[in-house]
Length: 119
Image (cartoon, rainbow, N blue to C red; front, side, top):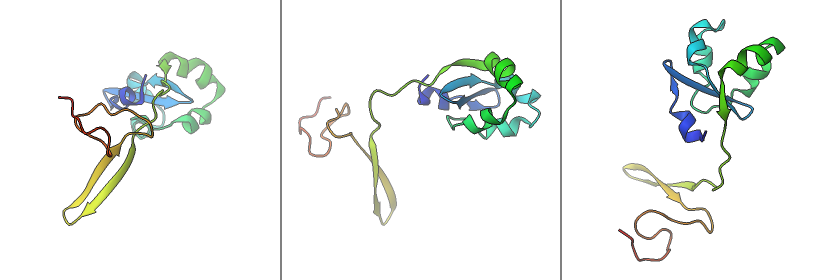
């Protein structure tokens, strides 16, 4: 699963967590967790729960966690766009720029790239 996919599952009725590169759907376990649902919900949305995983007993890691494993985090083959911002009188504007040598798939030029726009 991509991090974008994982981040969509961040509610009590649809809850995924990530630990050591593995993805777990813990939705049906939320109400049963001894530490309460809040302790799990604080780690959703792609936040790393590896330290929480390591905290659990060997029994939990070998008998309980595997029941909820649904896959692995996908490795990103394209580096993310760099983020910068401009500050003005009316607040900040975020700008996304393509990585060095990266391709731009939007409309119009990017950072002085070819000025021809493909609509």
